[in-house]
Image 1 (cartoon, rainbow, N blue to C red):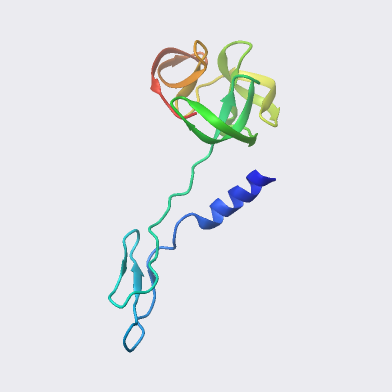
Image 2: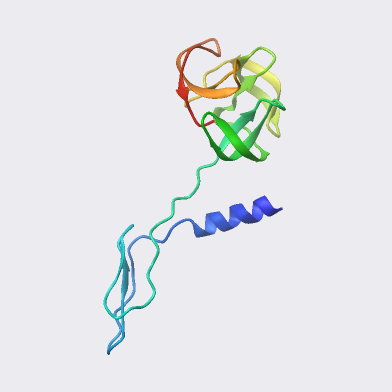
Length: 156
């Protein structure tokens, strides 16, 4: 429940609307605040300032090797996810199959688990799980749903 509330608040608070302009009031002590994209300024006279745009987090659907299931990654880096949210299905249904240690198209799945596997695939991002250390790395040479040559760490 708390995660849903946090996600709702994040979605509602992600940044300021572009080009917000408030009119300059007459008389002394008045101010106007202009936000032209991402550089707000306060004119003489004081008053509230508009905060710079805050980027919205980009959540991904990441494989959790400990439970062989996909979850929303709320926080991650260095090739792994540190904080998982609810179950999800990755875009394109290209999922890691721990049994064959390869990526396959999931023809029938739910709640982050595939119940029926299809043909071999490669995730569009080419960010694949390296089963030797359970970290995600960019694949430089993929074939048959496996990576023949891993590169640097990537965000799952």
